[in-house]
Length: 306
Length: 273
Image (cartoon, rainbow over all chains, first blue to last red; front, side, top):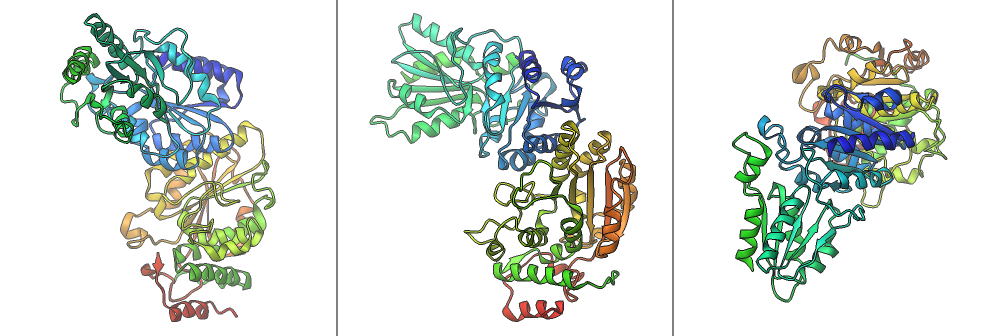
């Protein structure tokens, strides 16, 4: 997914002289083609996120579209104020590409895990948040970021995740992607958790339960209309994400459902990282198991609710 | 105070405008604005290329007031030059006005970047300057920093970037009034050797009396100081300059709820009609 994302930056920049790229201190050779072919639009500015975001804002105020890339935890935490003031207050076209959203960097520990990046970004006016499920969706998503008005945070997953999005997906910023229909329960997922949602729905279907899935590659602005229309048809809703249960997709969906004025209440659960720093290392997969962000927990939760 | 530069009529008139804006709002960072009056005056009277009727004119020089709390001085100049109707000046900080306690780019014609939180303007200015190089435009970018602002690490991140990119179309002016909110800069977080710092970060650096109009005109007329290097001008100033009882008095960093007789004392001390 990261590879596709950066390749797309290169491809898009080749076609559009207004596209710039700024990295902090990325792996050697990153976007080497971009640097080779468009050196005057490629900057590697060192480990200085505040400066990088400010520079990007300056270029964007001059009408450029600027893609900025570094590790997700750094691009959201270290330079948060530059994100708020320089990007969101000016509402400029800067795209922050965060490597390793969620627990991708589990072996490197809590400094590198981005467990609250969506919550951070969601709280700021004008910010758009995109968390695609796989490389194919990334390929659809990137062209939509070129002319979108205002800043965007693009959350990258680990890479080489299985492709789970529909072949005929019509990606639009701000639109939910319906994956399957169902009358018994609704799973709402973002990012790579779509795979878990699909596996759970398949298994539940074998047991006679019809579970709908809405995939949210855009977490902000949230497609409330789609959520309400799908939640209307079921008695239980479960949100699943590789993120803290505070402030992410689950919180956003809870806000929509709580204010929905359904005639009968919907049962609702969030699956995500509890309010704690990951205490162990291991791998993304092992951490997901630890926090029960899993197909098994989805199935168990839906059975309890329906 | 150290600086004994005598202010001419124009400098006094600008200060009178600033005090009037301050009076009608009932609040503001008065002393922080008074130290940079001559800096913005010389920039807008003699140095910057601009057209108030076309604030986004592509060829204009860009000027960012990174120490956004000094905006009373900037507003006085922008209002006088016609970037917005003068009446806006008298609605500073009012609900229906466009001029806030810190300047906003989306609201005020002539304001190039929204500032107020310190340490942001230099990096944004670097973006402007890089764009100028890329587009082969000969506009220049001026960034006015506060001295207290130079406590922020982001300023020095930006300083490294500016010299790395050889941005000789970028000019930093530091309003070095040697006072910040709590105490003197020497006590809070000493910047010295200040000019040496800018030099060592790759800036061609000059020092001037920041209230001496002729000195400012002269130094700003010699830009860039060195081809291939960003320029820095350390402007030695006095916080509260021009109103004797405000000069150097830390309590005047930010003021609100002034009584009528206190306001009158400000006008009296300015010595203008």
